[in-house]
Image 1 (cartoon, one colour):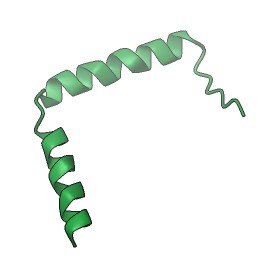
Image 2: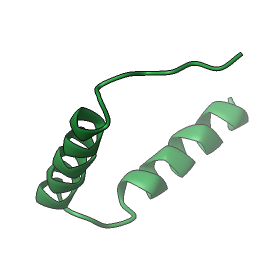
Image 3: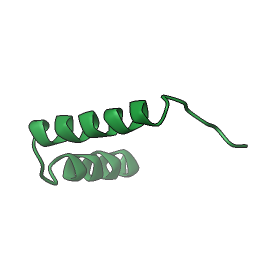
Length: 46
């Protein structure tokens, strides 16, 4: 279906947008450290 093809194409374009695995892991490590420093609490406001 055309919609499915469009979604796959757009997802592939996002994945190919650049950046390396090392950069992604460094970013995730940084955000993990911020989360731990903030008390490791997830707040869901309704």
